[in-house]
Image 1 (cartoon, helix red, strand yellow):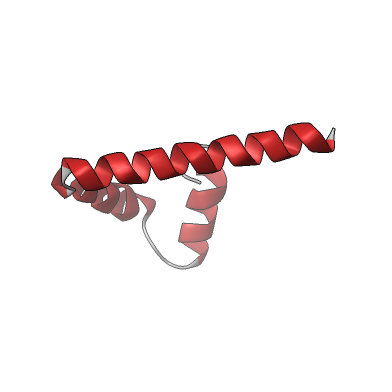
Image 2: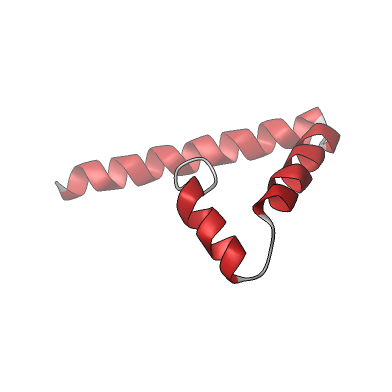
Length: 61
């Protein structure tokens, strides 16, 4: 969401009374603290999910 729809995410955070800066700061700290193996697993899972979404949208056209 943060990568593809940042303006929408920021809008929703502000509606909830949250500061977008805090979310991005927490995400950055978490990413730096995450062990490499877990990061790789998350990155691979995300890539597979994106591939499936793109494949599904291509078959609908």
